[in-house]
Amino acid sequence: MKSTRTRTRLAVLGLLGPFILLFIFALVIPIGYAIFQSMTATQRSGAYGNGDATTIFVGLANYVTALSDPSFVASMGRVLLFAVVQVPVMIVLATALALMLDAASARGVRFFRSMYFLPYGVPGVIASLLWGFLYTPGLSPIVDVGKALGLQLNFLDAGSILWSIANIVIWQYAGYNMLVIVAQLKSIDADLFEAAAIDGASSWQVVTRIKLPLIAPAIVLTTVFTIIGTLQLFAEPLVLKPLTSAITTSFTPNLSAYNQAFNNNNYNLAAAESVILALIACAFSFGFLKLVGRRRSS
Image 1: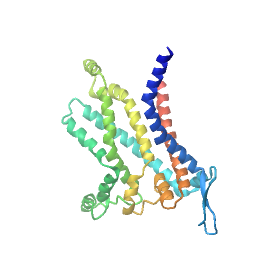
Image 2: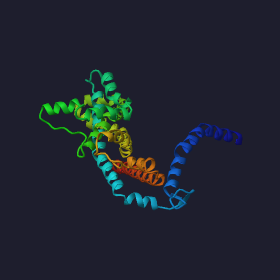
Image 3: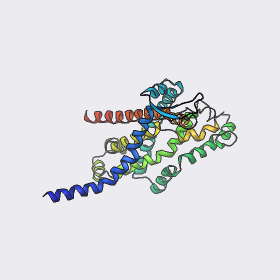
Image 4: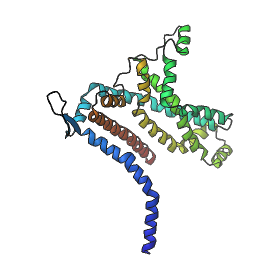
């Protein structure tokens, strides 16, 4: 009996062991080290700070410094505003595309599904470069067409740059989220649709009363992924930064942490800003999941 239990435990450990080790080294240790870094500071000896460097514990001082920085606080507000607009647009668009591809009368489903998903295969940096050319006056055919129509389009000024970035993000990730929702749609039992047709349900009733309720888990999943990805906004503003003065070194929290670490050599403050951003992402993600759970139970 004991030998059977031992073999079972060893088998389970053998299956889970590689994952646990990878999880610890790839996630737990980096997070723990970032938290440690955020609570320390580097102190140098000598009259001009050119002496030996020592690491001292400063507690929450780096967090206070980060939250006292108006530019970092403004970057958090900017990203939250970005999320409030971009996340609903992304999910509604992805859901609409998935429902259109799942329609019984849809033609060329494979072609359009590939076309919608294709932007996801373009790396974020390349996508930002492509759209950067389309945004730049003198290079952009869109701006030229706008001028011909009497419209003064400026996608890179302070008032529109955030939404120009939102356009890049939606263009790149809507197809991926659509594919997740399509997979959920394909798992719905076809008998439900046949029963609805027999009962005389319209196409709109099938969508609102059968499809949308049954794909709710996929919509929730894609929403959580979109929230997390939105708060981590980095590549797009970094690539577009040389094209416009509207993007500063603290335009987003990730850009601010990057600037503190690699331009100011203040890795401790950068770690504190990163931990703050991670906590906010966790709070919004779990808050959304809890809100959805309450609505389902009520």
